[in-house]
Length: 144
Picture 1 (cartoon, rainbow, N blue to C red):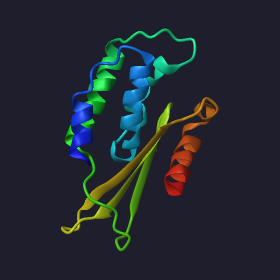
Picture 2: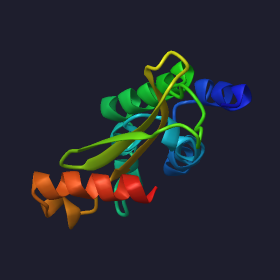
Picture 3: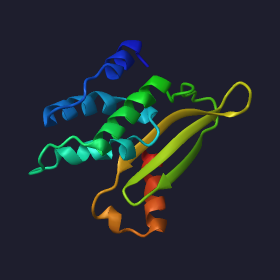
Picture 4: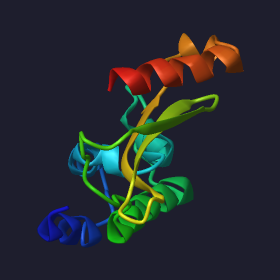
């Protein structure tokens, strides 16, 4: 990941309005595939973007903001995709998000992270039982 982008995120000031949250989310969202659980982590901030919702930055939003910045600092991406190697995909689902992880064997034979995929589920999808939420995660992961 571009060190200048990481530095920009590390130095990003605490959002004070909806437009600030949108700007931070726009930059962070571009790299979401490299951040495990991005949809889950960003959810408290996204709640501030709902129509007719008053902007109130609280402890939940601050924790979300800090965790996302920390994820960029750590750099969760481990290796680049190699089309010659086998792929291993695992998925997960919760009441509000789905996620997937793509891994490939590294030079030492151990599985290495290549990319993450996460997204929040729609209100209709929230009505699915857990079995169907897990299937939704599998289908979305394979489509990506």
